[in-house]
Image (cartoon, rainbow over all chains, first blue to last red):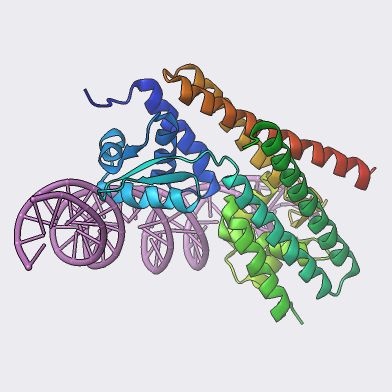
Length: 153
Length: 153
DNA sequence: TGACATATTCGGCATATTCCGAATATACAG
DNA sequence: CTGTATATTCGGAATATGCCGAATATGTCA
């Protein structure tokens, strides 16, 4: 009796995927992530292809993409080439990615402010940069607090 | 003497666009936003098409898209149909958009946690949802502080 | 109302993405 | 070294996206 992916679970996968794709995660990878979230145990590529109805090549690239995002972890089994995948308990990965973007944006705005003639424009760019940096800082602080409070590994 | 868009400015526009598109902003709109950031005064669609080298239709849709994001403001001129566009001083728009996504994701995770059999999975989903909510809260607080401290209009 | 200026929509082309299946590579056991 | 099981790469078809120019709509003045 293999996973027929009950209605609820299927729906969950779809919804999570729809919410993740705006973050730049490609569709198949997003669905895979939703699926992994529901799997109590690591799953093999073959199981994935069956559960999600996608080709094995797609499953392979999607899995490694999630791994590169540190959203999934590969559990290699000694004594065989078989690899099992599971979600990583790294909820922060996507937030960190956002923060990198915020930082880069702030930096670019500051640089632009210097090489600009108009005083008003320059001030605006500086203010924007400040704002984004504040946001970045707030998220980083919150992540640290969370990590300490919740997961004193 | 029309805007030949100096090297620096052109570069700035490109860079800002590259940093914005991962947020889901389509290319032309992203470039337009970068351009508007450098404009001391509101600009017309015709100026935009010339400065950015894009068609007028593209400029029109991009401008209205930015407006719908509240990233740009349309300054309609009484007595003529002409519309001028400028950046809005609403730096928070993109962050708010992110927050909406975080909220939706957290909600979906909680819902999924209830209709799931495995205790472990359920706990994981709840924890993730908590995390995203905490992040959302942190950003919202930071935005409020910023607004009060910086712009007591 | 008619004439003009400007903005918006629409159809279609060009390009980029996504995904699959076949072919290839890699690791392991005997 | 050979065979088997698995993962990965690659080419191409289907689909989606982005953008333009022509056509259309909308607003303004006389």
